[in-house]
Length: 81
Image (cartoon, rainbow, N blue to C red; front, side, top):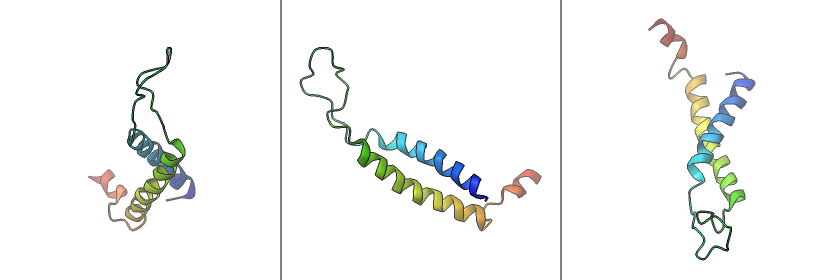
């Protein structure tokens, strides 16, 4: 895996994990003001979610990196299959 492939895989994994983490801990507003969306989260905690997303993505990316570099699953063999 080249460094360009590694960065692209990490970015893809990061975005997928972000969309899984975004709904965690979301509480809608109890009494929204007029003109405010009822489903808007009270405290979105985006920096915390970005940190959690990055940590989870690192673990997932490391697993993918190990699988690819150690040829546990050889993608070149799948072409012949």
